[in-house]
Image (cartoon, rainbow, N blue to C red; front, top):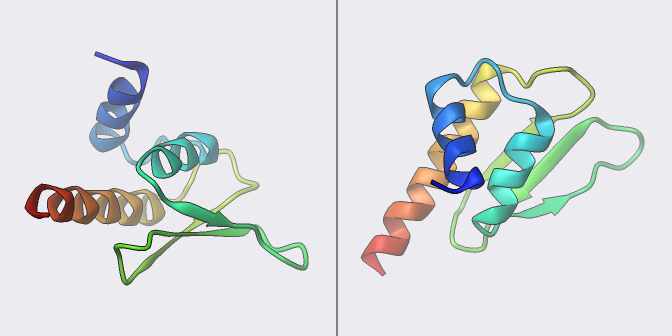
Length: 86
């Protein structure tokens, strides 16, 4: 099992204990683009050309809020399903 696969498994099993860099890495690995915050904001926006939704992650805290991690996992799952269809 690769490092990325192990990380994804750990994140799915415990979405309450995920650092910003870990979620960022997973999203970028599946093709999400990142938009940097402007004006000192801590909210990073991730988007993918195949999806009609965005994922927002907040940096600057030790752990991400659980709802942000679950939203990222849902977006990755939708992307995976669309990839399998297409």
